[in-house]
Structure formats: C-alpha cells, structure tokens
Image (cartoon, rainbow, N blue to C red; front, side):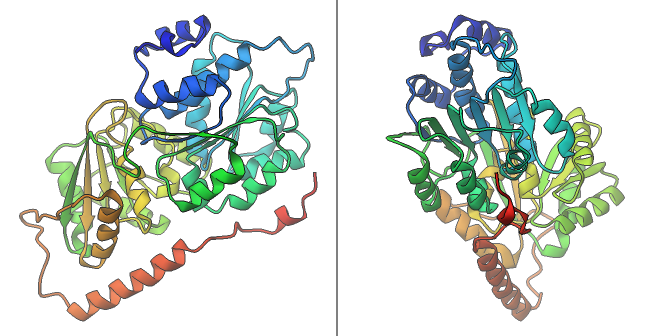
Length: 417
C-alpha cells in the first residue's frame, strides 16, 4: 500500500517523497484513513512503529484543506499532549518535517525551560501546539493559549501520562476544550486505567490494535542474565567493552542510581552521560546530542527521561535494573529495533528482582529464561535471609510506587482562567 492510497493530499505526498517514506507502517495504514474521516480513535502500537506520523499526517492534511484565517493571530486548532519534554521535542520535530511545505505554524511548550520565550512565541497564536500538561496549564493561566476553537486533541503515550499522575491536569484541561472535537488516544500498552480514561475522552471511537495487546517488539532479541547485584556494573562495562558496542542505552530505576552507575562506568574507561529529571533541559539536550553523535558510548537514563528518545539506529538497550511496572519493560526495549531495524535488549536480574521478571513474563505471556554468563555466575553462598528480606522490601516499595500520585505543589489548585 502507498501513502497516496490512504487519501493524503499531494502536498503531503510530495513531502513524504522528499523524506523517503515509501510505504505506511501498519499503524499508519489503519489510523490515517479513520482520522481523515473525522472519527475518534484509540490506537495501540509499539514504540518505533511510526505512530507520530499516524496522527500528524491526517491532522496536517485536514488543516491545510481549511480556508485561510484572515486574522493576523492564528487560532489553535490541534493540541498534542505528551508526558515528557523529550517526547514533546520528538513529536514537534516530526510535525515540522511533515508540514515543511505548508504555511502552518507549529509550536512547542514544556516545563523545565523558561516560560517567557514560550509565551512570546505563542502571542501570535499557532495552528498546532505540542505540549506537556503542566506547562500547558501555565500558558492557559497566562492567557496565552485558548482552547476554545480546538478541533483535534491527541494524547500521545497516554499510559505514561497516567503513570506520572497527570490525570488531574488532563481533567482540568478538558474543561476548556470544545465538546465537538476529534480526539485521538495513542498508547503502547493498554490496561484498565487507559480504558477508563478513554470513556471520558472519546466518542464512538474506533479501537485500532496492530499487534497483540502489551507485546514487546518482535525484532528485538531479549537476553536475560542472572547476576549478583554487586557485579551488575562490572558486567555492564564488560559487555560494552568486550563486544565493542558504541551506542548503548542503559536503564536504572532511580536518578541517584543513574548518577552512581555513570560515575563508575567512566572509571572503567567508557564515555558515559546521564539523563534524568534532575538535569536541566540544556544538560539533557547536550547529553542526548553527544549520545546521538557518538561522542559518548553509553547513556544512562531513568524511565521518565528516556521517553521520547528516538534513535532509529540504536541497537543496544540494557536493563540494569528491572522496572517496578512491567509495562515499562516494553517501553524500554522499544527504544531499540525501531523503524524496521533489529535490536538487542539485555536484562540483568539479581536474586531479589526475580519477582519483577515474573511480572514481565505474565504481561508478555512469554518465558524470559535467565542464563549465566561465564565469569559472572551468581554466588550461591550469599546470605539467603538477606535476599528474602530484600525481596519483601522491594515488594513493599513496588506497591507504594503503584499507588496514584498527586503532582507536587498547590498552585494549580488556586489558578483561575
């Protein structure tokens, strides 16, 4: 199937030809015609399958078909909400690429950056805005963003927005969005919370699932090594060094853990950078740029910070620590094996993480058999009671993390606009 067969106009087809987009991916082939018909959709697709183009292309198509607005100030017609700054940047860049041959004005807004420049860019309005929920509310409070004429509302990686506790922000934003609109909800994983959210967002929506629900990318080889906790860093550096891997994305659970791991890997002679929520946007951008350019071999990241990292040629992902939420495993390994390429996902599992591995296996309905790597076999003489206590503590922390979280600060409660 070609993009022309999906009903896109000639301007977009010319742009796609320039970008060397030859055939639509499954999610694009199924979602684009539905969106062009004006139907709400709830779409499930693995990361790296081209879902941004699946909603960006039909939105641009419909906006450029509208009569030109005679007003000097553009009225916001499309809003895309993302959970993280990095994902917002990725989606914004894709929109700019696809709208290159049009007169559409596309803007971006996210937290962690100065508010004033974003206000100045939005004073004359925009056709399309890509934003994180918290910063969007800031701009609405300032009177810079008006959602009264909104036609298209997109929730990208809606599962992550719920995990990060954005539900109150989402509900607040919805109060200022017209009831007559087209809404699109995209998620890599589906659970009951997503379906509950969809009932308040969508009207007579079409459900699109191009893969079995909550499945990992099929072109990613998954390898699990059982290893003692205190030898994980040693094994990580050994794998990267002995196999001469040049671009490796490594996941930890905490910011402090990411910082500590990076420091030790640098001592091992591996150029390493860190990206997490405590880093300024400038430092995060610089670290990501160095990683993409090959200046550093390893990028250590937390789950939230890594959302939106899109490197098509990235081949290696290491789960240094297993995530508390099994769904995050799917998102992690989905950073590799993108755009039809193959990838390798290495997972390091210590004794007290076995229950987390079991949760992942249940979610995937797939056995991930741990293996031992010569020279890094687990030591059976370690204190058994310590392992049991550690496992119990991990379970308690996992339950605490799974509880809904309220966003910090009370300012949002007193805002009026």
